[in-house]
Length: 152
Image 1 (cartoon, rainbow, N blue to C red):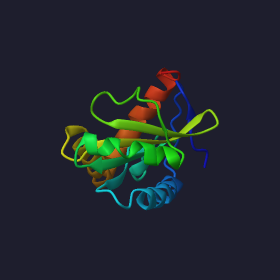
Image 2 (cartoon, helix red, strand yellow; image 1 turned 180 degrees about the vertical axis):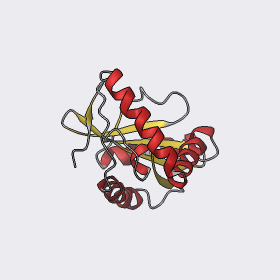
Image 3 (tube, rainbow, N blue to C red; image 1 turned 60 degrees about the horizontal axis):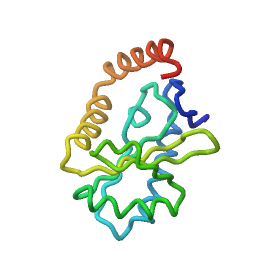
Image 4 (cartoon, rainbow, N blue to C red; image 1 turned 90 degrees about the horizontal axis):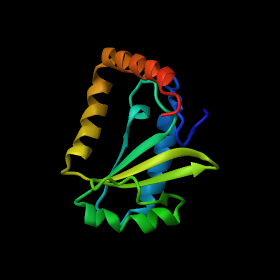
C-alpha cells in the first residue's frame, strides 16, 4: 500500500482494505494518548468507505464536546508525531497532519460533535457505506476529476 501524497498533488487510488487496517492502528495509538479525555474517534473520508476510490490519505475525526475543549488535545497529539500548523482550521475545527518525508499520510480533524461539519462527515460516510451503487458513481466522478485537476 502506497500511502500519502505530496502537497498540491492529486492521486486517486482504487479502494484498498489496508486503509481500514492503518486507521485501526492509528485509532489504537490515539485512544491510548487521549484516554483521559472525552473524545469520539472515527475514520472518515473516502478511505473509510468500502469500495471507494480515494486519495491515499487516512482521515480521522476526533469529536469533542466543544472546540475549546479540543484545543487542549493539540500538544498531546504533537508529542506522538502529529503536526499542527494552524493554517487549515477555518474556524470550525483543529487540523493536524502526519507526514512521512514530504508525503502527507494522515489527517486529524478535531471537531465539535454538535457541529454540522462533524455530522456531515459521519452522515456522508454512513450513507455511502450503506449505498454501494452510490460509491461506484462517486468513485467515477473522483477519477474523472483526478485527470482534470492533477495539481489542484
